[in-house]
Image (cartoon, rainbow over all chains, first blue to last red; front, side, top):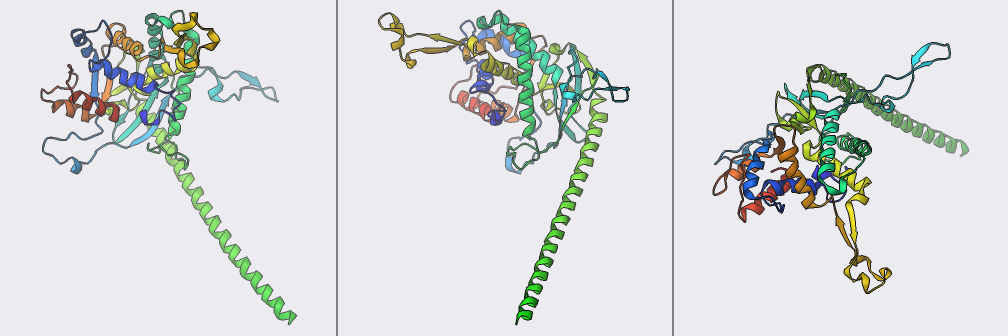
Length: 203
Length: 206
């Protein structure tokens, strides 16, 4: 994300504020007054660092250049979107009832329930990028709620309004991200050219 | 003389027409090839979509209590054969989206403008822009780091917060004078600390 933060429309410093901020805390360098190295020892186990499998684990004495990266090429970008409400029925010229022709993206979201799909992203030689809209929403709502409690300037925030704005921002940002995978001459990103598929499974 | 001239012009026109015809044939051939290629790609795309639907989406499991789940980056942290709940940018990416929303829509809550201390001795209008200290009440490293610290320690609903690192990070820790394993940390002295942070910044996670 760092490389494409401008394309994605991140405002200046937002990426570093979070990314470097996390590592400042994790490496005991945050200047939080009441936090000591001893207290940090209780914090560290709450973080689970996961090593990705994209680069080879070079053993001591091995020639790094000779090692070939064995990674499954990414096949597609998959967006698991929230289900949409069924379109209203309209009468056609002959008086028959048919679903209205409103484009799917303009239909109302079915209110998200607190559940989502857990999907395998890599199997049988196929690898996917999967973003789960319901999971993103719920996680952000939790972050926003907790921020409004612990950050003085956000106390009294209209959470419902903020959540809506944040959902719109997340959609905008993801659309920009998807453009980085488009097989178009104007796309200069170094990301693979893969199709983007939307699925709206009913849970 | 006129007949010769006419014949020449006629021949030239025939030649030109033949060239144009040849060009048109090449363009048409290229167009057919492109259409064929586009059709082949469209079929492949549909087959891939169907494959994903059958083998990934329909085989997914429904989990309840989203914030209690381990939330990972959209690439599933590169883990094979493991069901994951994945979002763009992982947990840090989602926090970035929240902060970007604040920056774009709630800057009035974030910015606190303090006037210079000399307001009593000078007219407010005479205070230069530079003398006004802009202060971030939210989008400030200390506030965000404190929030990350508190959220993880006290407000996290899942067992742990998962963050992806590159093998280079693990490799670096293992080569420290007093090696560390992944998921271990202590105060690291210079110059190793700066080298580690540079590695993290460069690789976005080691």
